[in-house]
Length: 387
Image (tube, rainbow, N blue to C red; front, side, top):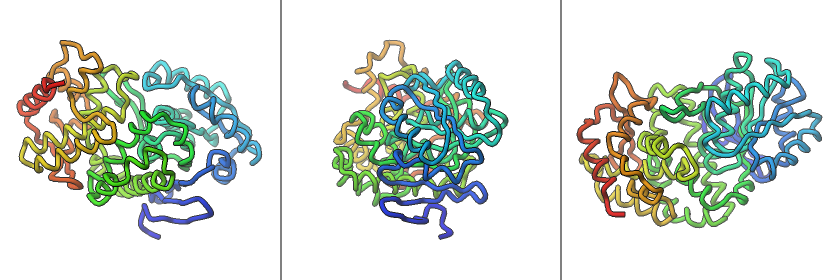
């Protein structure tokens, strides 16, 4: 069981993956009914028999009482802090409020936070855990597909600024990830699709067979087949766990997980991180752009790029930059503006943009020498494409 992403243990209805980081290794537990049984899973990880739960108003209405009851049955006291839902919450103002409210509970260095929600809550709670008292423990209980397959795993935490997404943050690994696949039943279809974009990403990075599986089974997984959803979550988590274990702080191949994200984050920044464009929707457009740009540069075949766009469109995700017209794109939107946002990307090195491009399906690679003029022409063409 030395492989970091190998199935480590199974109990009835549960599967465990290990994120192999030595003394900081932790489990990802995947199953159904995990939220209602959270106390049993977290009790042995706590130094103190009390936790602070951070959630948002939407998730609190559905799951907070269940979690608190489960903790109570395990002899764990809890306090809850509820934040507004949505990407707009990931800013300095809301983080300051969260930090003050956590500190007001009288936490100690042996305290533990529980992030109950999607990617926003996980990122905010993780950043609070990384910074308060110079670092305390936290546990991820992701309730969205995007969080279960991506953001809850790997220890990236942070908030957005007006300059871009996740530009303030820290690497801080959770002690445990509880991925309750049953929670996905309550998600709106749009939220499921947003998370599905990240599932597709793993196949396109280095698993062409996985992408082919999604072409066959993705629609049924989105429609509600729990067995297929569970397979998608497990496969995605295993892929990410292996990459994180090999490159925790993104010094090398972990950057491949940003396939589509340089384009996507620029689009999000220009749309103001609002509800008009969800993160996963921006990632889908970004991935399609990465393949289209790769094809333009002669790196991959136009057929592979078309195959990616075709799958996103078939599932119901946006796959064209011209989709922004439907969001009320302002006349001032230009390639130059998008490239300005990209210049603030965390992967900029020596003033040069870093992109994740592809030589084909499952053949992503890191490219650090993209010509700005070529990129600008490509973006202008995509912005001006027919609506």
